[in-house]
Amino acid sequence: MAKECEENLQKIVAGFQDCRNAFTAIGDETRQLILLVLLESDLSGIRVGEIAEKTHLTRPSVSHHLQILKEAGIVAMRREGTKNYYYLSADETQWKEISDVINLIYASVRHISKS
Image (cartoon, rainbow, N blue to C red; front, side, top):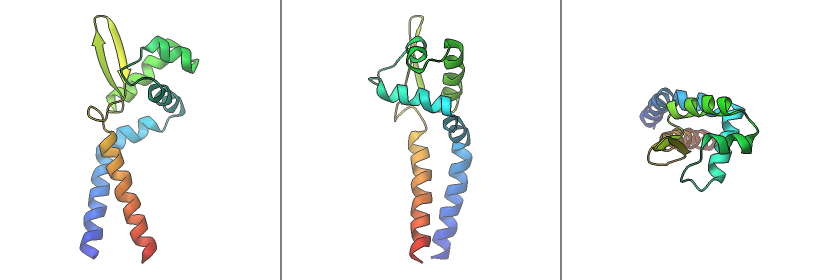
């Protein structure tokens, strides 16, 4: 049992390292607001101007925060001509890795609580 706990701790540490930028990015309230707008969209993509309108943020501010989210692997972007569309994708982003780390922590806490 101790070996299993040690292995889980090592996985959690590795997960934290792999997802550090993602956790930092989603910790910001403005970026959380942008993520909510992306979740409310049809997930095929939304442009900076539309996000700015829905969040009441400036376009430069939205662009800045989207860049952080994109670099952190939270948001994906596709280009159609000169237009950029931002969206959430289970396949193209780090959401699975984030979920895995959180679930491993939760399982560890549950295990400790039962001891």
